[in-house]
Image 1 (tube, one colour):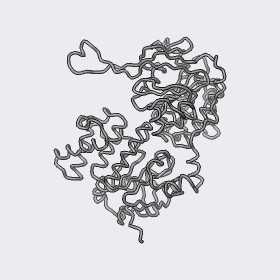
Image 2 (cartoon, one colour):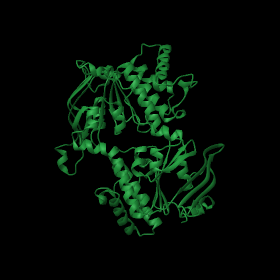
Image 3 (spheres, one colour):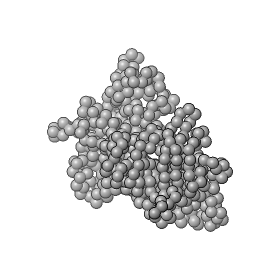
Image 4 (cartoon, helix red, strand yellow):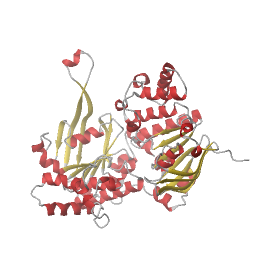
Length: 534
């Protein structure tokens, strides 16, 4: 029995930018209705491979063949490619906030696709756009049709992107990291939705990701890329149970571990808490229609009645879906927003006045989620790391400041020997993992007692995630710092947390020892979160 012709076949595909080759002789095929995952770390060539299929890399030199139903797309004219893009092959991009037009409603953007590709009238396209929003699971689709991208949650924006990509009913969908910034349960919902739509329409899907848990839930076949080369491919079972290539084995062995977790302080029950919160509440003013809001202000309660404590040298992990109150809790602990209830740092609390909070600000530092967005591109590494030190320790001389900056950077694994002229480099000259080390050094140079970690590894590749988490474990052991860890990654919680707090709709539904809660949860909501990740 002959093998059917592939829907898409990449043959000896080579991609180069000037003299720099980024993909080297790639051979990969996708059959109609098949779900294939293209896996690898940042810089492996996954995204440029997908973009080359649609000929969206204007400055790249492409050689080899991109066969679409037997026809080489590399030989097609730019005008001829327009009938392929969106109509036969569609793409979901990684970040919907940048991929969606902020000046058009999501309904208008879906309707535009239908008018251009399906030649529907304006009214017909609007009706069909609402239906697509409903099909992708957006609640109240008629109202969401008129919403702008910034008025939707991350999950809703990703669903709107999916609706726009599927509106022209393509035969192949290229999904480039479509769930990176979403919570674990929401990621699983998006994959289940994509699988349902794929079965309903019969389209093929190429999923581009570095998240191996997503691959386990979705793919029929897996292809692994390293430094522009396809190093292994096979069925899901073959690759995950019997990986042949060392790089694949390294990826599968990159789950975080508790081996380096500091736990000495757990044996000292009399140790006084570094941070205590009692009945912590966060409310935001909410606009309401009509004249009544003139006399009575409405409020939205993001967090209510939260009680928790953190002892020196321990980590409190906070988990929950988007909108559960995790970010509000972190901002309250950092003194960035008003709160009700009690927050006590050894008898001190936030006064919400810069002069009065200066001493406490030094003791409580933060590392943000996105190392690309949290570092100023206009400041050098030396300026970034020393900025807080110059403000909080003006008595230090320039040589003393520079020595402390150098020692702290070395502590997080960035040495002058490896990076000459380190202090004068800018963030763009470093990888994502190296940027996160710079952000960590910026916080550590202040010698904090408490470090708030807001999704510190979600934007990083799995192997880099493991390195950063091992570094955090080592630093906690050496310095005795406490961590408040905000994450939706269950593996990170298991590796880092001594205690866990589970939030749902602003309320604490479960709290206790991390291993106990994560292995045998008492609350149904916690069980659902854990099931979504396994």
